[in-house]
Image (cartoon, rainbow, N blue to C red; front, side, top):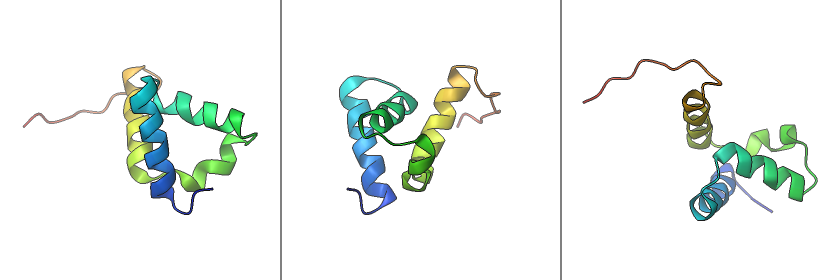
Length: 71
């Protein structure tokens, strides 16, 4: 269905914007609806989408927070 990781990531971003769900929730819902194992879509996840998921996990305290610089 998706030719590139960017197309897939834009699709996921659009759903996140429409529903207000987290990126991870949307990814898991996509896998469930399309009968995919989450490991099957790892090549479709772009770096920017990975970064957004990491930030969400840090905010939810699933990952340790990293120091940031405010400019």
